[in-house]
Length: 382
Image 1 (spheres, rainbow, N blue to C red):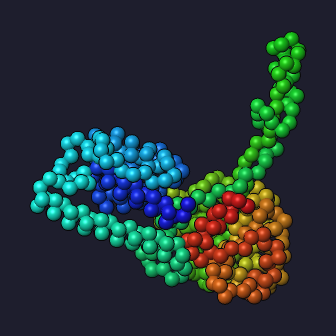
Image 2 (cartoon, rainbow, N blue to C red):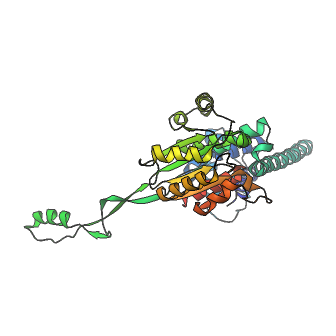
Image 3 (tube, one colour):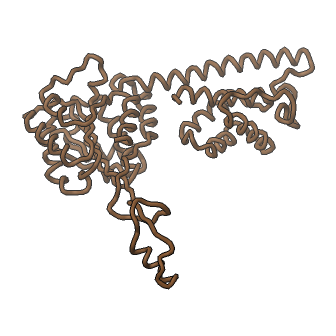
């Protein structure tokens, strides 16, 4: 389900509550949508808790909201609001607050006008929120102003980035596994005088592959460097087997710096640690240092490596091609993210990029939020 469809579903729940008799205004619906954006959409328990915290304020409305939540989100089609019953008008609710016209004509006219204004305001606000989200997801990082950049960074920090699993050398007990466990079977047979009545089985354990991010922070990548470092911060927070490096003219390890919980403090520390920020570009030499220093460690061997660069090499392109080939042999998957690929007119004609592409498994754009979401999905499915 797309983000816009999820947003329409959440807004529809607010309208459903209003039509069912609960006093749910536009501000509460928007607060519910913002809270839901921080949660896993598949987790109904957290979503219900967010609805309780934002859509109602009286304890006596909790049971009515839970009943409406189960009815609304429990069926694929949108249910109709009940015309009568306790959910249609809660006890103790004032006249005109239950979504139905009051008895007095003057009060009814005021109620109708206020309700029309609220509906119009709600429709406008929801359209603005949906439009802003869609525009922000598809807008190039280089074209964003400061407020849009901050909003985009907040969305980047919520990206779910997980490396794929791989089979381990170790085994674990299983009811029905892939291999017969002779040792455990014989040990259990001691309880039955040496007769192996029960067979034991085992299967391989699984563990996540290492994830390595190598970010280009040279001058040609200036419009995208900050967003990519935020992406590296989100990756570093996803697990312990994550390494983040950056390079301009030389390689710098950022893993420990990006472990900080505060993204603002992490960005400041990165700016202090990287001396070649927005400087020249030596992709081949930097990757050679990466392979020479880290190639024998588990940080790279069998990992999913993401290289974020525009491929505008200032050095020898043959050196870059050799290092990419070495990385391809060391890693499980090699993904190259190039912000220039977001342009429909882009062709990888630069010498460094053209020499490296034959050894790259996946070639992706990285110029906006939508492309980073695709990158996170590609890493998980690598």
